[in-house]
Amino acid sequence: MSFRVRIAVGAAAAVALAVVLASAVVYVVAREQLRAPIDEALERRAAEITARPLAVVPAGNGEAYLAVQPQFGEARGYVQLVNADGDILVPPRQETELPVDEDVLDVAGNAGEAFWRDTTVDGQHLRVFTFAYGPGSAVQVARPLSEVDQSLERLGLFLLLIAATGIAMAAVLGLVVSQAALAPVRRLTGTAERVTKTGDLSERIEVTGRDELSRLAASFNSMLAALEESTRAQRQLVADASHELRTPLTSLRTNIEVLASDRALPAGDRGRLLSDVVEQLGEMTTLIAELIELARAEQHTAEPEDVRLDLVARDALERARRNHPEIMFTSELEESVVNGVPATLERAIGNLLDNAAKWSEPGAEVELDVRAGTVRVRDHGPGISEEDLPYVFDRFYRARSARGMPGSGLGLAIVRQVVETHGGEILAERAEGGGTRMTLRLNGRATAIA
Image (tube, rainbow, N blue to C red; front, top):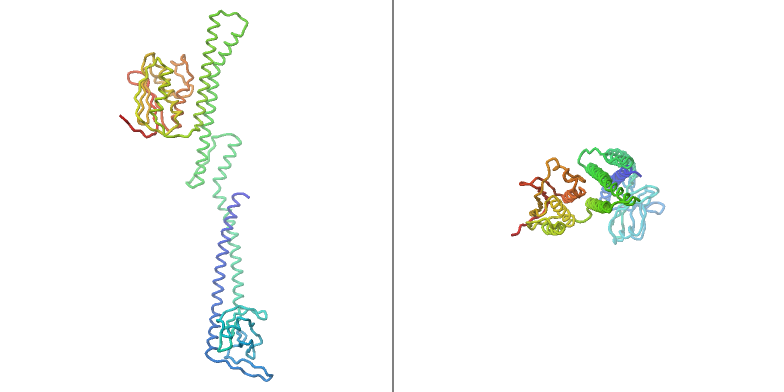
């Protein structure tokens, strides 16, 4: 059963329940209203009988009859006197006797209260009122309910027709409303099926309104945009990695083929070739490690926590000092708390320090400053040219002046990726007096200490 049909069935069921309950209430109220005049008439007759004592008239055949006021004993009313021993007296023209049971005898014996009862006599539905009449007897007065039953039967038929019509209309309207309400869902389904079939993540759903389905469509569009961007980044990463790996692999293969050939090489040439092979293997190892680091940063599976940014920067600084003993690192670290992943933040700050050391002469100074959720790394090297500034954080980008230096062009790309996953920003600029200043800003809680 489709969702649309389920909505229509649910609407019809809800309307059916409401109509049935309303019809039952209407039927009960109408029945009480129709029976009320009959009960009132029977009470008046009972009052008349109580006010004027009944007389017993003997008949010629040895039987006795009940003498009552006019109008009793006619076709539209019945009356009978019941003694405590069960004897029954009725008017002479009344051939029908009302049923007598223990309840009636209790009233006749003054042991019970007056009561109302519905009964059927000779196929006729009657309303009977039984009350005590003097010591040792009771009187029963009754009137037919034929007209009331006919009216209730017609009312029940009308209510049934109204209920059936209401349920049918609810089902039809439910289908119509669900058709319109589920239009965004159909568009969403169609788009998902086209994306699945074609693999085209550029598909989008037109969003109109601000209801829940519109929000669902907007969320689906956001998901497609994120998937499209992720797929584009993956393809770009694969393409760039293939391009970057092609050159060292080609050179490595050529050198290995020369070394494996039968040609006799001078010892100096063989040594240079072996040195080139080791260097190329080292570059490839570094490149692959940084590609893995990029992939891990994209997954970002670690849960963020409150981190002392100054302590993370201090650890990265110690590692940089070990790796670059020829550089003089200076620092000014103030206590600063941010929310993030300590390992990835340390890697980003370490990459900034490594990049600054790479562009510094031996004995030069690299400055590290941490305060208020911001990390600044400044070197005193040649600086970055204006034409290279917009691209220094792109993957595999290497300035012209850096193409003869070791490196993969992924270090600063990793920094930007880490900063973006933490909701921060990274900025590269030319520093006054020469060199480059890298500024990494994170959203955090900073507290300065003396």
